Image 1: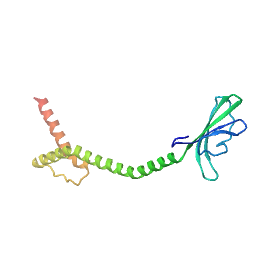
Image 2: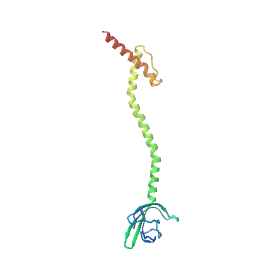
Image 3: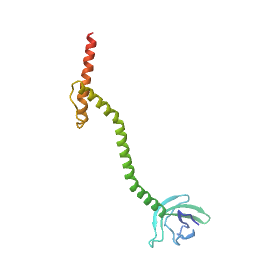
Image 4: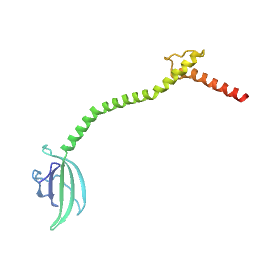
Length: 167
């Protein structure tokens, strides 16, 4: 008897005769293989030409009175293929949603982080305008928008240091 994952188990002698098999196993050997005692081999995918089974087969040889037998175990491929199909479908649907979520989250996080910087820039621009400076357009690129205001403050700090150094 086999479980839902193991489709067939066979015990095959050196001549290729099936000595014992699980319920539902084919009457002929799942694979023709010659192994020494204790040797193990992954035979690989074995399909029935009639389409009755499709197994991944592994073999292991064992010594018994009267010779060496090979134990063939065929694992049903259908559950594996079913899981792969489901995972592929979930990834196809879920990946775009995750990407959209990450993009929106990043946009909001960067916007929140730059909010105080924009408020400081607006205050500096207002101070510069109130002291006779030129107005900066909000449509200018950031480098052009911040440079005059910051340069103005830099020059004021520099002149204050020079004045303090002369005293």
